[in-house]
Length: 175
Image 1 (cartoon, rainbow, N blue to C red):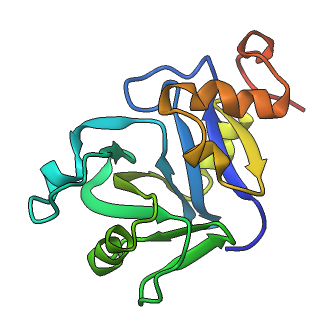
Image 2 (image 1 turned 180 degrees about the vertical axis):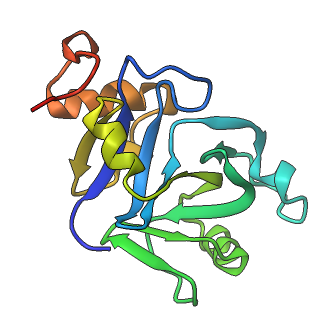
């Protein structure tokens, strides 16, 4: 992936337990569909709770979406030189490899362990965006992940666009 990071920010009119108030890091979007990781939904379990052989990892695991919640993703700044890494930007990498996750933890760098993902079929995300369900926010750097507390990411993403939730009208743009 090259270019800026794309975050999907749930419209204030989007309701639901999973996607209401969500901020999603979009990893892929093409003719076949789209997929991304919710990045503002910490779970009640720590990394060590989920991986008992990794004591001393008190950071929360994150709920990345309703699709395949047993699949883990690791977001982290610096590559560790193993197969299975994908560079999103100069400061953000992603991998679903357990070996990479373990190497990232051993390196001492910050990371997010995200379980599951959000997925859309062909044309579905484009249609949802047209209907006004999602606001697209592009960023060159991942500070939204590392420097903004989870509970503030939704508002911080909208702030980056210079909009307030009250100015977002339901229904999206119609031409």
